[in-house]
Length: 245
Image 1 (tube, one colour):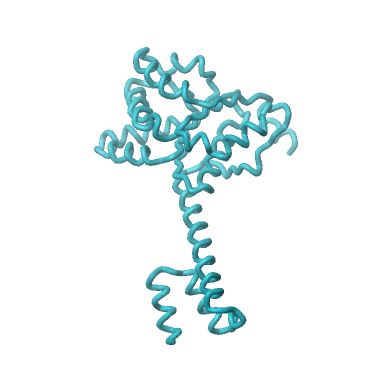
Image 2: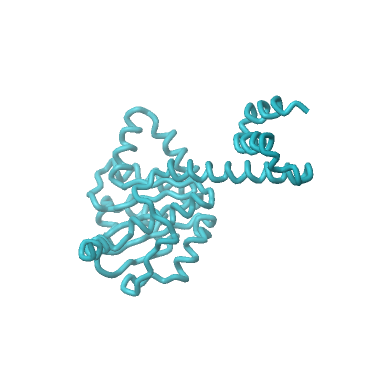
């Protein structure tokens, strides 16, 4: 067997990890005590694991998270009233599989954004396509897409995104263009994919902040009634961090 040709074929087929391990084994006889089947299992498992990790890294990068947040770092301090059982259910991502939504509300600084991104990070680990936007920036990007004709492409991309996170929802007043873009987005994703909305405005105030009763009714009907609710309590985590520094 021509080992050099085998290595080149592996590289040509983009079996990067397999080629690297196989090349190492040729120079160090790493696998000499293994059968052919065992060597193949080892090489294929290593290639598979590397590809999985690269895919996850790509999903995390494309998600566009603003913070590095992970489920293992969630703070369950009693003052936050964050139920571990409920969080366990949310982190299982069953609500995403069922195309349900999640609304996270609470005062500023209580960790809404961080928690939403931690759930988004978990979705990436489970290899679900995820996107994160600060809501105001989403509207800016969507308006530009409307102007240059790429809005249908963006909307199609978001339709194929299993989990969409809209952060700081309702922080700025919505104009007529914002309302229509939000309606288009919610309508496209309704009962097909999941959205997390993070807001310091209670849900009871959303109708007013969206404005224009008919569109507000349509948006809330598609979002609120198919949503899990998570209301955070306690003092600002940023304030606590300052005090302990």
